[in-house]
Image 1 (cartoon, rainbow over the protein chains, first blue to last red):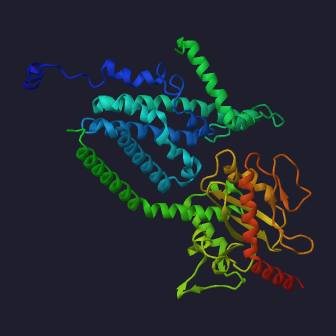
Image 2 (tube, one colour; image 1 turned 180 degrees about the horizontal axis):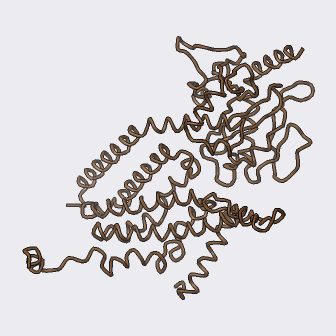
Image 3 (spheres, chains in turn yellow, purple; image 1 turned 135 degrees about the horizontal axis):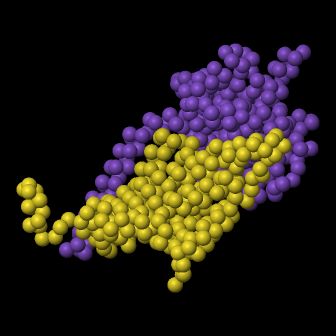
Length: 227
Length: 254
């Protein structure tokens, strides 16, 4: 036996495994059972607006993951020093700073994407998922747990908007990630055959329909009922 | 202790300073790259008025710069159509003229850049004249570039951009489908008066018989009005230059 293990044995409470069952649940719960979009119905606005194509949606998803994880980490690190009377303002300042950072980086390195996402990057500030996780989790939990919780929630948001974007781009523009899928399928059936795209899917209405269908399928499977 | 006013104020001040430094630092660090990105975007917009958007989208930034340098010549004029090469002792080039800043001055004090799209390596063989546009949409500034054929009447193409129009409504001015509606329209009527081109209210009507009207955008009438005003204003400011070119090409044809 090495000295290290002896020391561990002496410790009053053994350290929790890096990915214990409880921590895995922090990440996996928001994916389906506690999904921010389909169950908590948060962050709908951006889910409708940015999901006409996969590419901007992916950038949006990455931005949200970054903002949620980082703000959860920062707030959790400061949680014992934040005066409770101004905590909302403090959260807002941290979130706004992170969002501005994302927006500045996009402006410098992906200007086209910056133009396309326009106000929606800025609107991550008002995405209820961000503030919701800060209030509900990061203020009362340790940094590592908070990061996992934020990552889970943001991932839950991301996979839903990516799924919506997949169907909207496929049905609305006949493409996936800009690749013309419909064209290649049509060409298999001869020159006169052409798969028609659905214009409804390009408008925000299409997002409502797809999102509704996803929620329907999910609730049928999990048996979730609104209280 | 944590609830005392002094603590709250101190905490807020420190937080503000730290976040402020972080933001201004980032802005300083990324500033040059952002400027480059904006300049490149500007070139893309100018080119967008004369060549299809897909072609530009397929180019790398270097290719865009190269294409721009080979195919675009530029000149700066004043409200009377006279060429301006320096102002207050500082040399003036079209690329250094900030349209948005000039917009704040009165119309006859502004500088007006003109971009000429010419055949490869031959600046005298001009195919299109590209004129910048700037104005107000519903929420914020809108701008763009319009290209005129050598008759200085027929529109070759237009690019429009905006700072904060409503996505799905006014923001549709950036869509190729909307911009394509301007192609082939004319800005002068039969008697030679400048009437520009007017985007109409409502969408889905056919205006192919009317050379001065284009189909509107449903739900974005105010943005369309902004575009109309912008076109009317800026073509008006360039009128002296346009008339000038018109008469000189007429002479050349004779």
